[in-house]
Image 1 (cartoon, rainbow, N blue to C red):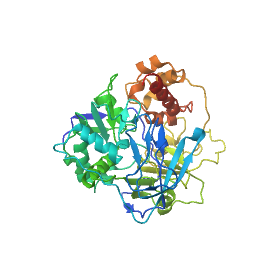
Image 2: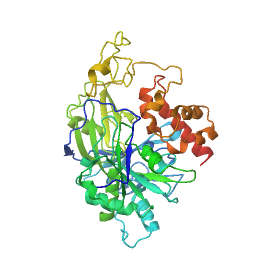
Image 3: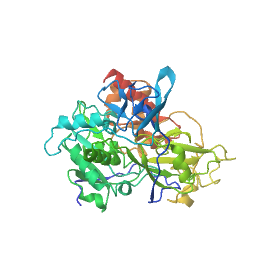
Length: 453
């Protein structure tokens, strides 16, 4: 295969952590309940369509986005709406559906891919409930169905801590993935598909996309980096991104006429006894996966929907997230190290700096970690350390400061339209100020949506 672009990323850092999932998968039986979480989507204003006790089929709409009423979120299974969990100001946190034995699904007319128009494709994706899989830049929100993106970016490169192997996830879904690419090609002029440099797997046979290769440390796999280097976003333009497995879900739906909610989840981390992949349905109960992965439930663990840098903290009674392919499990850092500031003590601590002697001994050997930050919040100073792990042509510290003071003009000039919070996950880990950069960027993006639109 030939790459049109070869991206060699130098800025960043790979965090080698014990417990990466082995390349083996298990098909789990269905769980009793499934949950759709509006909070899995950035800046979503939900409006419920059903009440508790309502009967639903797979594909029945549960709620929609008030900002884009055409965008519906549907039930991944057939059953009964068991509970609607609300938070502050009656904000919907969870819609829990109890599964029934007789699984039924809504059926939809499938457009002819060779003859249909772009509008027919958009209408089908909206009607079936597949549209929430598409994310839009700027802002990282659900894509606006009334806008046409100049390109769609798909990354098969995962450099995150304990990141997944998309080639393994998609090995049995290549035909569906190809069909999904054909569907997406109706929505934009060009599709960029990113592979690890030197890739020779089965997905090299995919047609209808422009290939590019990626090498380098995390965040080399982030779509924001690819967009910044290949097709930079200008004011008034839109670019979409999508999870590779959801392309296969779209492709399968165009074959069956039903909503497809397949999700392959890697349970990984040094808190996992048997890290591996599980084939389930979106919204599956988390406890079932943890038990099958031989997690010690008597240990005080941190369960994260997603990766260690950008994921969401959940408890063991929760459900898997809508979009993520990874559950990370590590012990809580409740035990502080005595004299932990000494550079020659406990050299197993994960760090990207050389203030501790651990780099002399560890190299790239995976280490065990916990949630202890090994430090406290400090003053924000200019050290240049953020730029070392941020490969985009953006000044991260200056952008963070502009977001903190809500200077919209500076935020625009410094590239707020090109980033999403996850791009600052590594900065959260490495910066000596222990700054919550992702939360600051998130607040900045919310301000831009309100003031600029």
